Amino acid sequence: MGCSLIIVSARLLDPGTGAVLPETAVAVSAGRIVALGGDREIRALADRSTTVVDVRGGVVIPGLVDGHLHPVSGAELTQGLDLSTCTDLESLREVLARAVGNLDRGEWLFGWGLDPNVFGDRPVEAAALAPVLDGVPALLQLFDAHSSLVSARALELAGIDGPRVFEQSAEIVCDERGRPTGLLLEDAACELVERVAPQPSRAERRDRLAAVLRDMAAAGLTGGHAMDANGDSLALYAELEAAGDLPLRLRVAPWCQPGTDEAGVAALIEQQGTGGDLWRVRGVKLFMDGTIDNGTAWLEHPDRLGESVQAFWPEPDAYTRVVAQLHAAGVPTATHAIGDAAVRHVLDAVEKAQAEGGNTARAAGGNTARDVGGHAAREAVRQGVRHAVRHRVEHIESVPDDTLRRFAGLGVVASMQPTHCCDFTRADHTDNWSRRLGEERASRAWRCRDLRESGATVVLGSDWPIASFPPLGVMAGARHRRPTRDLTQPPHGPEQALDALDALQGMTTGPAFAAGQEHEEGRLAVGYRADLTVLADNPLTTEATALADLPVLLTVLEGRITHRAAAI
Image (cartoon, rainbow, N blue to C red; front, side, top):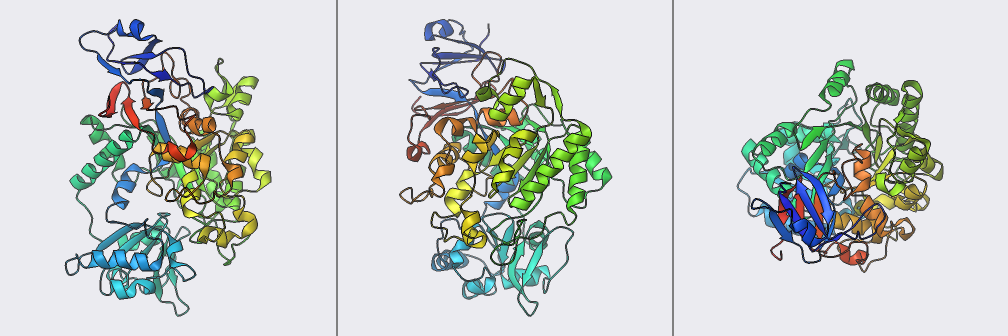
């Protein structure tokens, strides 16, 4: 047996049960696990071409997968000033002033990660930054990536002098006299300024993407569910793979926006399955609303400012028809739905599509609940059926009780980003998100545990660049629910924290099940893909507040080492 890689002196952790396996070594050939056993037994399989790595007691787990991220657009958005460390208006002005001092005349200023909480009780508008940005074209992305704050000069260069009407739910926010305030909501409005701003070259974008993906691999990621295929994303993935520079396995879901006609939907269906060995188009991403922070979510009752009352699709029934078309074609959907009305509509649409087009297929036996992603999967196996088209809802920031059990009943995956709750809201509900919702709705923030216990498969992710991508930090946040910058602060909704095993499954067995790949990903078993993450210690016994700092010793993608710590 010609083994390309052998890992010895390891503790092998089964994310299905949480048990440490009796074997201590793994052998890999042709990108698959071909043997598990004792060190001596597995070492005997090596020849001159085999790489043997002694991980010195390190813990081997299936490769960690981010259930929701944006590699290409994130690499672009995170160029410029990182504003995520600014905590108030004064610190924001100081950071911007230093940057402006280094600009040439007419040069643009870019920033990202701006938290609206820095404005306190003031409205989010360019006037608050005018003394610093006078005459400077500036484009500052808010942390949600659904809105931007731009300077007066940037508005002028883009020819924006008043409100406009868009096909989707987007807005140029204006004052009572019809003058733009500098706040742009949703892509259609933000793009008006982005089009006139200078853009990096293609080579610069490719190099930046490659660097970001290397950092992701070093953090322990072996894969990600990429929730867009915008611009030339797919071509960039293909180039990196051809050059041997793609260190993550990517499942890509192109967008379907409001106004997409029959031909557009047919094109999305035709695109399914295209790609390379390490990246594939699988699924379609849709939006049912925007965000609570900027008032563009879709709530069953308005927020306390009277906003968040509209769907992203001006005609929600059109969304329902598109979901039905995609379902009938066997295409899974992933829908951004943050508000309770948005989540309910997505579930209604999936239920209608299943009723009209059928939704089950015979399931292969031999799996347990923990193996394939959750209680919903267990029930499907018990009945001998499994949802053939696995639809998903992304974000699910606040949902009422009567919505919870529908996820399991419909086989819809709950895709959650717990670090958004950790870092952008507060336990005392004084943050912008909580103030907008009010006490009752803010108290049911990111109901990860309730969804899990109701039988749903819960997948965890970062939504990078919205939050940091290191997967151990995401898992830690799901467990402690405290601000990453200050873990001494109280948790927001500790009753919604996941236990250690559920958090691990959220980035191993959960993503595998959501992708329909549970028979070849997410476990340490012969025949499974050799996508592996090796940690310095057991993530299940490491304290939640220490988990983010647990060293990643080795990352392996399809048997190829993509990160190796100096210690081994």
